Length: 283
Image (spheres, one colour):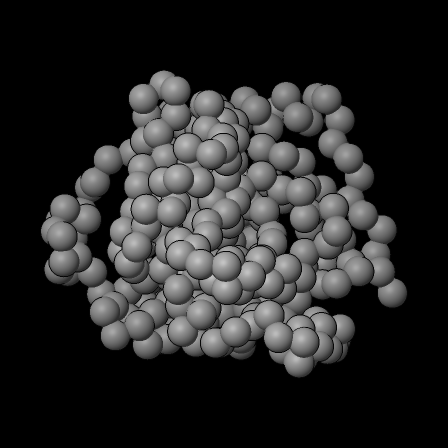
């Protein structure tokens, strides 16, 4: 049975959240501090972590919080932990951290206690970092609280500081020809707030072929409807779950498309867009 959604925060609570964001932002370090960060080959980087909170379909406050650590550059899973949580705050644009970060911090603390040797040197976070309404998204928030370098990884462009998904932005995307090609997301302030690339879309094509076929759409639909649960405690893979409907409008970083050299390729992109799970993030 679906649980009742968390109550919308009062104006007083929102004001407290803003003050807490400002307090933590003052502690944020936005420069390279580790030797591997300044090495083009990332020499010295051995462990990369990723965190996410996945929601149960039809349940707006029950979710699965997950942490996975991989060896680098082999990208072999060396540690994983997933468990069910009950979120106490609703999603409010610009304040995703207050909904999800407490559970992500708990995952990092569990890792520190259980397997400190597997502590990641950097965390990839499902959400934005400095590309945020107040320059302090969920990735920054988590980084300050855990004292770990964090990188926000979002799915759509959060329109702040003059950033727009306009024709110029799309032209820059068209110039991305190969994996690793990027361009900076620079706001009107002259600050680089993020980067865009085409690796994920290229990987989907190479791995899944043509995911827009009727058979694959049907299979994907069946998987999404199939109830799955995340382990209550301890290691385990995250459940195949989706965010509740109210979270589909979350602000996020980039919505990238591969170059479209011809009409067939354009059709493929359009079908891919329809079949992908667009889940906005607040970075």
